[in-house]
Amino acid sequence: MIKKIIICALFIMYIAGSSVSALDSLAYQNQLVNHEIQAVMVKDKIPGVAVLLYANNKMSAYYFGDANPKKHVKVSENTLFEIGSITKTFTGLLLSEDALENKMSLNEKVNKSVHFSNLPNITLQELATHTSSLPFGVDGLPYNASVTEKNIKKLNRFLDNWTPAFAPGTKMFYSNIGFSLLGMALAENAKTTLPAMMKNNILNPLGMYHSGLDITPADQNNLAIGFTEKGNPVSHLPSGLLAGSWAMKVSPKDMKIYLEAALGVTPIPEKIRKAIIISQTGYYIMPKQNSLLGFGWEITPLDNSSVIKKLTNNPAHYTFAAYEVKRVKVPVFNPHSLVAKSGATDGFRSYIAIIPDKKTGIVIMANRYFGSGDLPNLANKILFQMTK
Image (cartoon, rainbow, N blue to C red; front, side):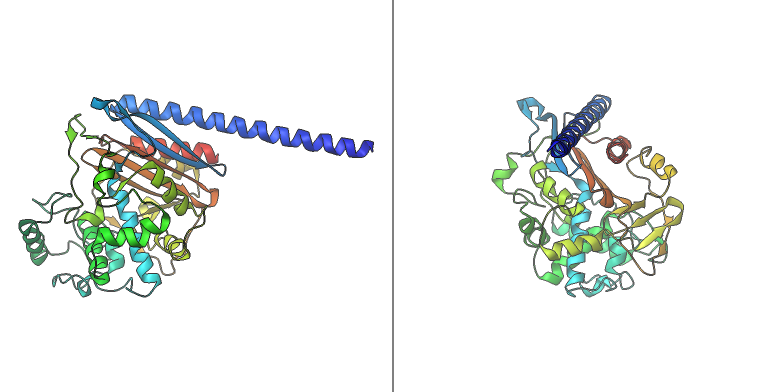
């Protein structure tokens, strides 16, 4: 009898200790997030921020400031943010789904789907990994260019006269145009539009009903006001001609679902689960950067402390340079990596990062553009603090 009492007492003490430990961990997490986010909001004059953090088997959401400062509308789970180039991870996921179902081959030439005769040597995989040799953009054609005859002619004229600066598959050069063409190829092959394809293949199956490249009039009421680096408000535009590279609008409520799906911590359709692994696998390695290129994702193996230091001290949002790459002979998903993507539009900044084997991930969305590396730096700092 005494032995049973002692065992029960020890068990109760263990449970109580675990509860206190969990509470301490959550209190530390809350303090960390609040301190880091409020500091960057002051530094970069950001009106509003949403943070989603999955750690210790729990999703936490944090909302700061205003979605619409003039009308005093606070950021909430329903606020819609433009997430810019994080859209590329969705476009890469569509490619992964098509490859999984043998609708398109990763090594398929892009001109088979999109009839630009000057692109015969570029594959869909090269478009999805920024190794196509295509430039960042086209002069006179903004990233959010509308679908007009004039803009279509500009794009066609550029592609008809374009000469690769290097052989596709030999260097990485960040290209919005590349992902835009990938989106066009996917939609044309499916005989639909890219916004519809996103809805039917990813957003609706995951339950992300209030997000999209284009959104409903009702959901437009929840759009945050975006601000330029100088503090000027910007207008929201439809997805336009180059949608596959930039145009997704997402609420924190829906982004929770995407973050959990990217981490593999929640039941989702099997096709999407497998496709996510394909998209997060590295197909080219950048030796000098110690990172690999997935489909829209950049993958950094977490194998030494110097990598951690680098990932929390990024100097800028973009570094436009051509990096040497080597094709991975046998691509393998590496869960002990930081799998990440940043995004920006004229009025917004965003970042998503996960560490799959730690089941930890973060999303930060802000309604002001700023060019520094502050956003990925603080997000990665929070992740590494939570995973020790």
